[in-house]
Every structure is written in structure tokens, then in C-alpha cells.
Image 1 (tube, rainbow, N blue to C red):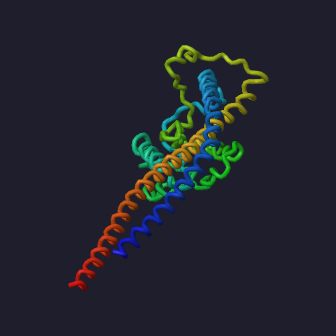
Image 2: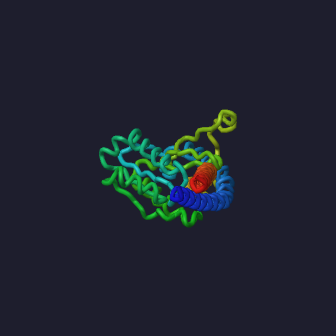
Image 3: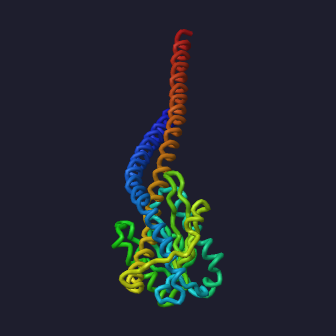
Length: 300
């Protein structure tokens, strides 16, 4: 019985230690989430409005050289950016983003995969770890996996510029991004969106009447000069939003997962303490019975 008590005591110590770790990780993730949530909350309306402006501009520039980012062509080659976290312990967040990327590849881009014309870019290690096992022979670019260490616009823009250059040069006919869209701490939505070419925007029904028109923009100094700077900047801002979304989603998913782990550890501790107390009572009862039996034998 003493062996059983020792085993239960060791399990209680182990579970209690695990609970302290998960609780600490939950609090760290909550602190990081507040900062990441503020960044994406401030960025999202700005990036979405810029994308609306970009779409309207490109719709009004038929035949213009500056509209190259909005020209759709048959997809014979494609690039996919898979944005995941560098670390685990965040529930199904990373696997959901990877599943979204696989669904995109095996449905919309099935013919392109057969022709071996898909290039995978990775931001974050978890997506790369999963994809290299499933597609060992596919071309993969890992130069940007460490971007989450610094999500400033200047640090992220070289990747988006590389993708834009590849699209303009004809190396890629389409560019997609797979990432986690942040809704709240408990809900992160895996997304697969087309980054290039720029599609016509989809608007909410209550805003349709406001945006259902071709905007007549007045350009000053010259249309070409402004668009040469404006369009790449808008696209880079949209791409930056994907990474900020994923960063907030990661911290939200980890905070939720660690909160659940802490709760489960607490429930396990309750059960173990009940088991320990029962075993201890059995041991005490057995010892009392042995003492009583011994005393009775001596009297007899």
C-alpha cells in the first residue's frame, strides 16, 4: 500500500508542476495577445479600405501598364505562402492552416501540382515541418521562416516584394496566402486567399450601395508616378495584415489551449487527491485492524 501511496504522491507533484507551467504560459500568451490584438485591430480597417481603393483603381485602368497586378491569366504556375507559428502548444491552430493550404492545392491547383509548378513559401516552422513530409519533392522557400521575430512593415515587405516581382515577371501566374484570421481569443479562422492577381472586391450587402460604382480618381502629379508607388504599397500592406492576423491568432489559440490544459490539470489533481485519501484511509484501517488483531491474539 505504501508503494501505491508513493506513486499517487509523485503523480500529484507532477500534475501540479504541469499546471503551474500551463498557467504561466497562459498568462504570457494573454499579455502577448493584447499587443498582437491591438496591432491587427488597428491595421485591419486600414488594410481593407486600401484594398478597396486598389481594386477600384485597377478596374478603371484597362490596358494600362500599371494594372499588371490586376490582370488574371491562366494559372500554369503558382506560389503559396503558408503562415503558421514557430512553436506548438496552441491547439489545432497550425494544423488547421496547413489543412486549408492542402485543400487549396489539391482542389484549385491540382493540375499545377501535377505539372510541378507550385512553389511553397513558409513563414513559421510548423507549416514547413508538416508540408515537407507530405510533399518532399515540391519546391520550398524557407528564407523567411523567422519573420515572426520582427513583424515590422520594413521587415515583412521584402517577402511581399519578392512575390510581386515573381508575378510581374511571369514566374507565378497566381499567388496565394494561407494564414489564420483572428476573430477573438477563442476563434481563429484558417483562410486561403488570393494575393495576386487582385480580384474585384467583395463587399457586405449593407455597403453594396456605397461601393457599387467605378470610382473616378483624380491623379496628381501623374497617374503613372503615383500608381508606381501606391499599388505596391497597398499590396504590401495587405500582405502585412496576413502576418499580423496570424500572430494574434497564434497567441489567442495558445492562451485558450493553456487555459484548458490548466483546467484539466486542476480536475486531475482533484481526482488524484481523492484517490490518495482513499488509499491512505485503507492503509490506516489495515494498520488498525492488524493492531487490534495482534492485541486480541496476545489476550488469547
